[in-house]
Structures are given as C-alpha cells and as structure tokens.
Amino acid sequence: MTNGQEGVHHELRSVLRSVLHGLQLFQLIFRMNKRYTLTSVLLYIIQGIMPVATLIVTQNLLNGVSMAWKQGEAWLITQFALFILVFVMKNVISAVQSYVDGILQTLLSNTLNIMVCEKSTTLGLADYENSEVNDQLKRANQESSYRPYQLYTQMAGIASSLITMLSSAVLLILWKWWVVLVIFIISTISFYSLLKLNREQFRIYMDRTPLNRQTWYMTYLLTNDSAFKEVKLFQLGPYLLNRYRDFLTSFLLVDRRILMKYTRIKLLYDMLEIALLFWLIWLVIQEAFHKEILIGSLYGYIQAITLSQSQMQAMIHGMIKFSQSNLYMEQLLQFLKVPTSDPVQRQKQLLTPPKVSCDESFRIEQISFEGVSFRYSGQSRDTIRNLHFTLAKGQTIAIVGKNGSGKSTLVKLLMQLYADYQGVIKVNGHNILDYDLQQIQERIGIVFQDFVHYEMSVRHNIGFGSMDKLEQDEQLLDAAKCAAIDQTIKQLPYGLDTQLGRWFEEGFQLSGGQWQRIAIARAFFRSADVYILDEPTSFLDPLAEQNLLQLFQDLMKERMAIFITHRISSARLADKILVMDNGQIVEQGTHAELIKLDGIYSQMYRVQASSFTDEGVGVEYAGGGRK
Ligand SMILES: Nc1ncnc2c1ncn2[C@@H]1O[C@H](COP(=O)(O)OP(=O)(O)OP(=O)(O)O)[C@@H](O)[C@H]1O
Image (cartoon, rainbow, N blue to C red; front, side):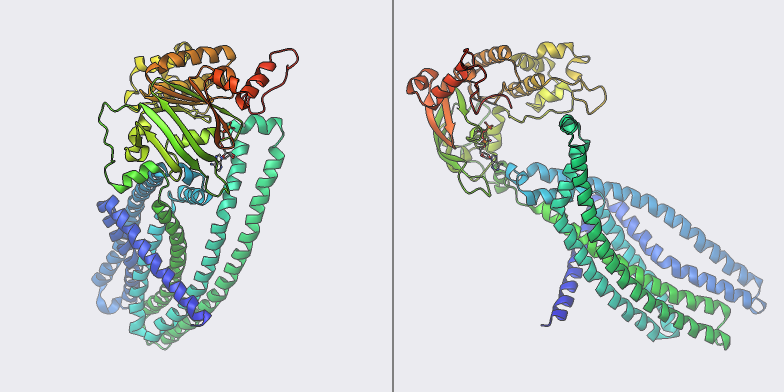
C-alpha cells in the first residue's frame, strides 16, 4: 500500500471512529433526557428543511408576481401568506431551539463534570503521582464542560446541513444533475486536506498538555494566596511571569504556523469553489436571458447553487470540527476508562466478597508488617526494605529517622494507598488484603504530614473524620477537646459553624498550630482502633506538644497508635520506638533499651539534648526540626 493510500485509510478510519464516538455521545445525551434530546433533533431536522422551504416560497412568490395576470390575485395572496408563514416559523423554531439546546448544554456539562469528578475519586494515590494520568485528568477537567456539547451541536449541524444540501441538490438535479457532482468533488478534496491539517493540530495540542500544566502552575503560583508570601518576599513575580510569558509565546509561534497553513489551504479551495460558483450562476443567467426560465426560477436556481455550495462547505467544516472535537472526546472517554491503582477500588471492582468477613463488633487489635518492601514507580531502588514489626492493642509506636528514610511511606502502605508492595501486612493475624479494605480504613484515624486545610466550617473540618456524625455538636467538641482546640472554637464568632480560612466570606484564619489541632481533632472524631499521627506536633509549641501527647497516651489505653516524630522528647513516651534509616528499621525497642544500644537513636538523643546545654546551643539533629 502506498503512503497516499495509507493516509486515506487512516483518515477514513478516523472519520468512522468519530461517527462511532458521536453515536456513543448521542446515546449518553438521550439517556440523560429523552424529551429534550428528541425535541432538539426534531428542531435540527426542521432547521435543515427551512432554507429550501424559504427558497421555494420566495421563488413561487416572485413567479407569482410575474404571472399574476394569469393566475389571479387570490393565488398571489396565498403565495404571500406561505412566504410569511415560513419566515415566522423560522424565527419561532430558532427561539425554541436555543432554549432546548441551552438546557441540554447545561445538563450535559453537569453530567460529564460529575462523571470526571466521580472518576477522580476512584483513582489511587499512584495515579495522582503519574504525570500521564494527571495530564488526562487536566484535559478531561478543562474540556468536559464544553467539548461534548460542541460535538453534539456539530453533529446536529452536519445533519442539518446535509438535509439542506440534499433538498437544494434535488432542485439542482431537476435542472442539471452534473452540477451537484462537480460541487461534491471539489468539496471532498478540500475536506481531505483540511482533515490532515486538523490531525497535526491535535498532535500539537497533545504534546502541549504537560507544558500547559506547567503554564497553569505558573499562574497558580502568581495568583494563589498560599504562595503569595514567598512570591512577594523572594521577589519571584517577574521571574515566574517571564516563564509564563515564554510558554505563551512559544505556543503562539506554533499556533501561528499552523493557522497560516490552514489559511493557505482554505483560500486555495475557496477560490476554486467561487470560480465554479460564478460559472454556474452565469449558466442560469443565460437561461433567463433566453427566456427559458422565469425570474423566480432564476432566483431559485441561483439560491440552490449557493445553498448547495455553502451547505457543502458548512458540512466540511462541521466534519473537520467534529473530528477535532472527537479526538478530544476520545481522550475524555479514555480517561473515564483509566484503570484505578487504588487497592480499595480494585477490590470493589472484583466483586468477590472478602475472605475474612467482619461484623459490627470487628476491631483491629494487632497489626504486623512481615517482610514488607516497596518501590515507588519509576524509582530504581526500594524505598521500604524488608520491614518487620508488630503493634498490639494498648501500644504506642513512635517512628523516628532522618528525612527521606521512609516513615511516611510506611504509613501510606499501612493505609493501603499503594497496591504493589512485597511481603505481608497483617491485621489480627490475617493478611490485610483478605479484609474489606474500606472497612479497615474506616477503623483508622490519621493526621497526614500535609493535612488539608478545608476552606469550610469548623464543623466540616472536624466532622469529615466521621461524616455520619457531622451534626453531633457534643461529639465534635469532645474531639476538639482531645486536640485541645475546644476553647478556641468556643471563642469563634459562630462556634462550630465558623467558616475557616480566607478564601470565602467571613472566613476566620487560624494559626498553623491551630490548623494542626483541628486536623488532630478530625482524626480523633473517628471512633477508630488505630490512630496515626505523621509529625503531629510540628506546628505546636513544646508545652502544647507535651500536653497533647500526654492526652494521647491516656486515649490510647484501649487502642493503638503510631506517631512519626523528629523529637526524641515525644518519641520517648512511646511503648516502642522504631528507628528507620534508608528504608529499613535499623533499631527497635523502648527509649531505655535504645539508649543502652548506643546506636543511631542514642546519637539523635545526644544531639538533641546537647542543644539545651551550653556547649551544644544551636546544634540540631540533621533530620529534625520543624517542616
Ligand atoms: N510519591 C513518591 N514518588 C517517588 N518517590 C517518593 C514519593 N514519596 C516519597 N518518595 C521518596 O521516598 C523516600 C521516603 O520518603 P518518605 O516521605 O517516606 O520519607 P520520610 O521518612 O517520611 O521523610 P520526612 O522525615 O522528610 O517526612 C524519599 O527518598 C522520597 O524522595
């Protein structure tokens, strides 16, 4: 097969695929609202017939004027009435159409936005850390609100143009059949070349998505309040702005090149079509000159020629745009089909019941890691290596270690945020994967190192820990008390219903430590068996830290706790301390045991303790300190 033939096949296949996706979309719209969809389709069909109906009534009216002496005035009045009727109908239909389409557009954009958000909630953490999935998500997010509707109107527009073209072609065929054939051939050639150009444009768009995300990130830094202080004080504004400008300029250069190509091709074919059009019109004028046709028919044929040509062009452009929107639609559908990496979702999709069933009385009483190793995707070595430890009811474990030693990763594995680890994590002696993982997650309360500041009310900020108790004020305040933030809440203007943050009206901004206490309260609000705090005291002053950990100790009597910390003063309160280095547990035991061992832990202890002695003032353990 030659390159040319291959190209034609490729383009034909893409047109077929477009039609297929168009049908899928139509099915979706139809299922969404049958009544509005059918009305819209009917209106598009009528819109397609309207131009030829207008042409016929105008032609008849003109012929009626020149033949009035023969047909009589009543006949002329009838033609005029029909003429008025068609014009009124045209306006009424277009008004109703814009109403129906407006509703369909909103419904479709809502449905798809919800579908994209729903899909996002089923993705796993590893998906969010995958730049390809991120690109897809960004495209889907940006385009779901307008692309599919655009595709629908383009599809309907093509159908409508086809109806107009066919009906005007019938008039032309009755006059000279080959005229239609000539118009068709010229238009097909122009269609093919524009389609090829369109593919090139799409490829550019696809390659641009990662850069688009970077561009978005520049605007995010420049316009977001969380980055404002640093951008201002490090005077990053001009630098970021320049990067932003450079991205936009590079996009413009490429866009200009492709637009130039598009304009050249379009101009060439337009000129060809116009020459043909004038030649055909000249043929009609000659027939009228030789009195072979009446003045109304002269008007009718000229209109039919221009209408066929313009509708053929509209169809071509509609099909080009349609195939363009369809390429984006393909992306959207692809994103909606991305397999999730989330272990909980994967388990749900399997539809097989968990091997270990748990009733209401189920409690986590023991957790153990047996030879657990894990490597992040794209990394050349394991981040977690062969971990072994056990945690039982009533115990508290502290995990200490340098930055990057794998402490947070360990917690993420326990929370089942990643699927592909080696070894076994056991709960009450059974592999965690044999349980309903969602049920396990629900029995764990966690404060992440990068916990979320919800720009919502205090109620939401704490209540998100256990949604079914969102309206239980007393319990919300109890949780707040455990995190020693209850007094602050009571002093807020609307108590639990005070809006937090600065993004929305009447928002009350908390300090870093207060936000952290709110996050701790959120974890405590969940009646869990295990509490995990990843650097829970990084924003707290030492006194507050001691109080909080003491409170924590009391609360943990019937439960289990894991807390990650850089402060030995906190770690020493735990029943067991795990010291991590380079992804491994290198020491474990009580504070006294580890001091006796005289290893990394005791070295950390000495460094931190020495910062309070005269000779060691200013010395800090390399991995410690606030973040
Ligand atoms: N999503 C990720 N993808 C790839 N590598 C990651 C990812 N998250 C963390 N890492 C790498 O894994 C290692 C361990 O990170 P982790 O966050 O578990 O360390 P940590 O002990 O909690 O550190 P810190 O005390 O600074 O919080 C680091 O080298 C880090 O670069």
